[in-house]
Length: 326
Length: 188
Image (tube, rainbow over all chains, first blue to last red; front, side, top):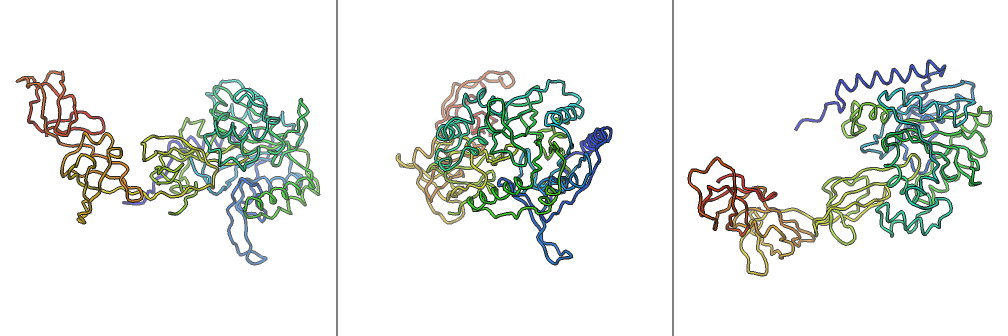
């Protein structure tokens, strides 16, 4: 048998892909957003407990160093913001180890952009406008949901106040996981399971669904605020279409001390789980210390957007060569 | 047996789940925007044949199941057990229980090779070849000349299976049958 050398996407699909990428660039250029290119390799990696980073050993001016393949261009782009870049966007090759499937590829293209001075609501508006522009056939409405409301609707439970025992039982039943496997898990694992297995497939059906007010524990690099019910929530949104998560946006955390403590918490959790620690990105922290303007930023899976625009079943259908045959 | 992590789950991999050997049918990564990744796995229980879904945290592992598929010829039954012999020249024989034989009982013919699934060296299922040639032992007399028109009738085959056959088929004829659907294909 000969090696499988053929591209996954057809040449016609690649033409369509190039056309869509050109319209994404036009969208931002017309809005005065500067296109930037930041390194794929960085000295700082992501501490995110649920991301597995790839690293490589490189001979640098300081001798042999481990450099991280970036899981998103976030840290470098924030350093540009702190240096006074103004609004910026990037089509960034990003890498997440182990993520292969119908909606995942280890190496993928992230469309990430930052808007100094924008509120989260303004960025949501810009993101949905972009998606509607790229998907001309999409005529449906944009519908906003609160995380808590989705759990009430689809699972008849309050994700913030229900007991951990209740959450575990519900996650086992609706998430098709064994009770035993969930016995040691905390609230967030149960919520993530229910969100992924029960709620997400219902989102973005004949509409663009925007989800806001995530639990404060799931803020990642977003600020936190108190919602209308007085609950602390993450200042973060996610965008869904056809049950597929398309984008994740933040009112960006700009406080260096708070950022350092979140890195430390991630590493404490990594130790607890027996995962390797990732030293925090001192260059990002120094940039935040210097001062980054208040900004809203969002990361959008460009391959997924193209997949949806072209009505393809699998992510790899819009890639030249996917992880299985790269 | 070795343990297999979710990222090693491939279609066909045999693992232990709730005490039963299972074959992985599909494995799909499911991940919320930020947060824990899961693997949604479709598995076929090799004892019951039933396919079910189960979710695992990405990185969790399952014990491998000592399961293998071997080609064996059917020899005979003593009424209690059905006896098969490996076709690899070793002449090694395995006795199969009725429960493991399942629906394949009606497709048994001596000297035909079957796939026997062994778990810890014990037969747990028997898969017949996709096509098998069997003699008609009982059917209504054939209608001469009726080779083109539709219409069918039941026929009992030498293995005990009853299949629908065209009206022109006679007792004593050997027929090619698709064991997956139980459909008549042609005269052999």
